[in-house]
Length: 349
Image 1 (cartoon, one colour):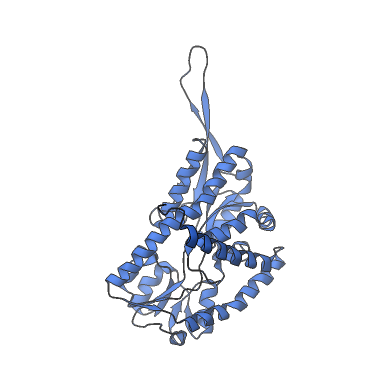
Image 2 (cartoon, rainbow, N blue to C red; image 1 turned 90 degrees about the horizontal axis):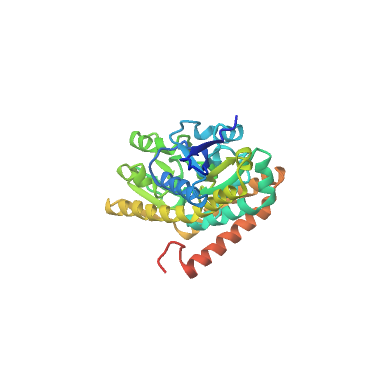
């Protein structure tokens, strides 16, 4: 059943005329809590939709998995459990094959650059739109986890050879490459990583800069290695297509305009959070390691077979896998150049 519904706000009736305005409330499902950088970005999106629709659209966010868990998001949105919500693509490798482009180990450590590059493809590639439409879904906007890094307790990764024999929590292609390099993979969520490190269940965990503060990982990390490799970027807002189609053209535009602006706003939020977290590690005297260039090249090389595998699976799903990878790389180059020449959109001019 579709959750889209209209609420009629009645006003006072004059002697000669009356008025009433209809407000449409959209139900949003979010598995995460109402705190942290993604919650801040989501609230910005909600507020923008309200402003751009002149109050016609209201979004009611259900936090903390009240409607569905993160691993049930796609099916729940397809079925209309909510009108729209957050989706983590790595949990849906087949359904979110197109969005999985953003999870590939393609070198780029800038969250804003990555979001802008993938957002453009998801928004403009007709085959991507068709793929989602067949699933009763519409892409609205993107987040990212930012750059993939590694934090350890009692160990340190100064070169890739140091991964051998270490128990490492990894996700997606990145975890597979760690295993290829000799690490012992451990399956646990990032929210369990603190306890895993503390109890010795894992030696190291794949992480993202902002999570150091958010999850207090500085309390257990003794070293932190900057890989400068890629991102987990298939994290965004999708909408039930029936709910989207039921909106007026003006409200559809308001929703999509807010979604497109999310990359800029979340880039600002995440950039500041990342810097703060890394500074917390420095202030705590933690060992911060920059991986040698030769090892970065080995990471890129090690990830190529997984990129090739994604291209094959994307092609089988009716997408242009190679073309999407080339477009994504071109977007990274374009937005990196734009950043270097003009700065970030939120930077003082």
